Image (cartoon, rainbow over all chains, first blue to last red; front, top):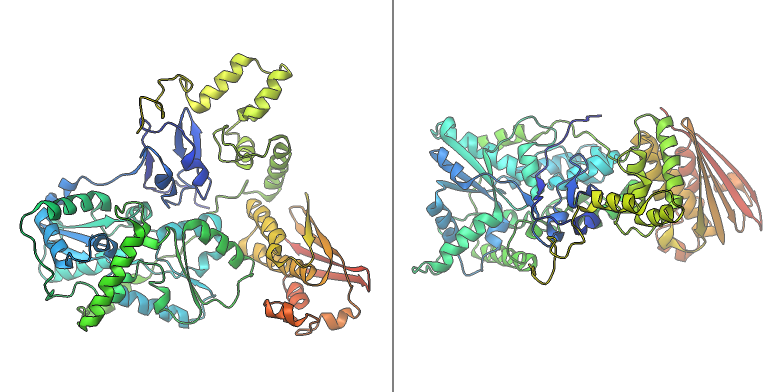
Length: 458
Length: 138
């Protein structure tokens, strides 16, 4: 098994974080611990779903992004823009108007992340007709691919081994622009990301060695810039007919829930929100759910419209995108079709290497040793109170027991056992306080500590 | 190491709980995913059999590094003709149970297929015991 650390996009701002445990309790892979008063994320356990970032009350969890000025290192500055970016704006604002503002900001080309969706769809259907084990699982959401690697290793072979839309768009446009005469050294492709997981996959694609983009820009950052310009400029363009159709209705809605499932064959199911996905995959693994052909699984509620880096309400975003798609359909206009030779090129590039399982559940590589450790975990569990309070700095009693067996924590980290130990005079009250300080920081109980208090309402 | 799970007859919403718990244990023990799948599929079938046919039952699991032994004991009507029950497609399930997607007559044959050994003993009017043994190393 690969023991290397995996790139992951979510980081904790140690100044802002005050160790409130919100992130720790929502993390679907139990990857967060509190130490020294701040949260820390176990890199190999994290699938970059962004649940912690959504739960954080003080915005202490962030995703690294490239400095916007970096785009000007290139003569040709390409933005790969997911459709949910458009979906955040009112239906009265034409797509072309949003794209004009992006040009104003410095991009020479704005291309849709979903540009090559038809080619991807075609390859997925080919896999469907092959003799691959069903249900096929969509490779669309990188957080889900990682989740399956760490938590459902038995299902990795069900994931269709092809690239997600963003990589595909980047590969297609890089080829096309270079063929059209661009200098590859002066061509910079930037991905506008709606979530943390897509950054991680762009920087470290699963089953691939190299990245296809030159930088990443967070969607909330760009939304604020674009919205500000649209809001403050005098010239208001009315919704005129766009001459060039930006995206087909199918591409516009591809990243929404049912976006893929609607275009696959057989019995298809679409499931969004990572905890829903986990409980469903549990059943798939047990063969409790049979005769399903295709699973579209997305980590965020409402799929990419619920991405952690989106600014607008996710339900509004879905409604706006669907309305735009319907309007397009009514005009009867067709989106530009990718030339045959590029389609063939994209198809050749679509395959990814083998997606390997990297289970984070194993207690030990050696089964005999793992059994011994499990016996110890179970014994420790019988002493712990089982109320999953998180006061030890681990998300629940079971996690603490496993941490103890992994030699990453002690029984005395449990505040209840501490009281017992004090009562039996096994540890001194001073020692007890020190243990709590190690987990929760030194000045935790001071009234002016960095936490919510009458002087700090934010 | 031993584990014990109680199974409630007639409660289909809980059918699969023991299978999921055992699955988690096997994953933590670094058992090959293909073996995990076989064990869990066989156990799930057994669990559903108890829920569908018996009043109550319990599942006793014993794991050592070489193999897993699963003993599914129930108090229920028992199986009058075990050879018949082992036949693919044979089922005693009521229309109601079939409507819920169970009772296709695949339970015992499917369990046999997914275990290295399967032994059944049964007494009509008292209950049934199924023992499954599967090697954990390939």
